[in-house]
Length: 309
Image 1 (spheres, rainbow, N blue to C red):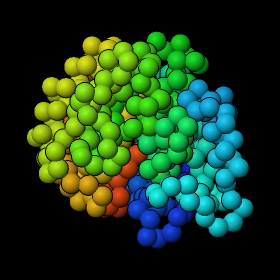
Image 2: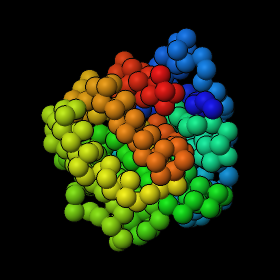
Image 3: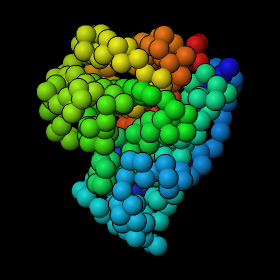
Image 4: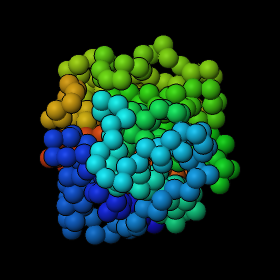
């Protein structure tokens, strides 16, 4: 079996302007590097729009309807200081969630070994009823609950190594004993959540904050000590990665000092757990990463690891 790569041109149409860090060039940089001959065996599919049922497992109807009403026919509508909509945004957000659902389908049906979804807008800051941090629908949480509903997965683990804490994923899953959310992130940093003391109603939230300037050694120690043993003990039926590459040392929005090798290492460790506990089932979803060079190189390292190269 192969690794599946999922994307869609709709992610390029969602455009807040050249000065916005969460810009279409992020996807273009990823697509360019994945055109390399090393990636010719990747299976490639287009992300469909998520159906309403999948989204409503994580977001209430009134929230989804409010986003639909806010979607402008022209121009840009600001939802908060970071998060805005233009005419193409809603479709891009629906396809971001839909790409995550498709990846789960393909992995759970065992048609592919694993999958990487390169779509934007990202998702991990979207709370149950609040868009924020460039995010509208929480793709990782939607994917996890789809795996449960459609395939009977009893437990799903989400590991988020984006430099920013996934407050939205934590918010949605806080009282859910069947889905573990684990995160390494810089703290203090936007959005201000993610202290180690935040553990969820059932102890299924695992936060391992890192200090500004922390390097790959500190990241690997946090993973080895605080995160990986908890995920393995949880024995998930599916592992989902919120794959943000903005903890890279070149990223302009934060202050960690990871390299491509660190992301490849983390990917391999999570694949090992998936192999032991989840019959290899793993889905990775793009979150942050705002320096185009480091985003492309880190994505390449991540995908090569998924492919077993």
